[in-house]
Amino acid sequence: MLGHPVPTGDEGVSYGTGLYVMDLGEAQGRVWGHDGWTNSYMFYAERAKVAMTGTLNQKFYDADWYEPTETAMTLLL
Image (cartoon, rainbow, N blue to C red; front, top):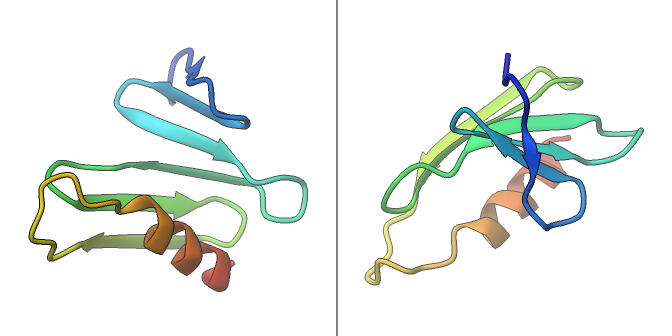
């Protein structure tokens, strides 16, 4: 699906063809997704068969979407 994703420099995270692949380990498996544009995102957890999409209503363009998204995915998985 992704062709040949390449490591991003973050442990367990690769990127290719516009999608991130995050390996969350044996218990949670892989999460595929994209961080969108201007605080929007979509991620899919393969093992749990859970998709999560959203937007963040932030005043500043560079608002950090990663931490709330990671927390939500961890709770869902």
